[in-house]
Image (cartoon, rainbow, N blue to C red):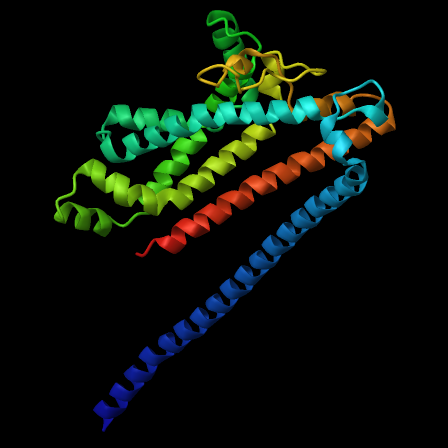
Length: 323
């Protein structure tokens, strides 16, 4: 009997710490849940504050600039009279610079991303290149402007032209396209590659017929993000000599003679909408500030349209693909 009582006492002594441990665990879990809730609440409030502030700025910009937007605003050149001033040369210059930037950066960026992810050997040199690409994505844009001024304007004698602007912005957004292309390719399961190789496809056939189609949505997203950054850049273009006032358009890309295409416009002077906005907002007259707000609305709409097109294309690609 004494032995049984001693055994029961030992069991009770062992159960007490277990109950205390469970109690402490429950308190700890409760505290962690409370901390998670508070952190989520603070994060949500911060996000709402940022969105409300951004929405307020957009609404104020739209209320100021939208009444000024009409057909004449797009069809007139800048003028010293605010009521007659337009953004014809600015939006045409922006369009020309963005086309040049896209042709310079997109093929090179996607090709570099494919090479680094699919073909490059995994050694110290590749890791060094990858590190430099990531670092270049965070370099201030004015640095690219200074480099372009010395390389494209003075060394290569390209002048203060649309081609110089396109090459400058192309170098600026090239790291973004490379990084996003690599990330999009990494999301493709290895089972797709293995199935392709199992059917006798070569490495390039696998990339062309399977990897690129499946990763096209992520690649397009990166391209649009890159072009959205380029369309609003001002500092590098000012550095290479973009004009703040221009009353003429670049040369026509269409020629009446064979081959009916002219690239003379690449060497013409230019201005873009961010620089036109800066020119108007720096003037003391309130009417020019309204013009700047209207230009900002147009620039935002162009960016939203670009993103909308990218989302539509990505949706169509994903709808066609079957995993």
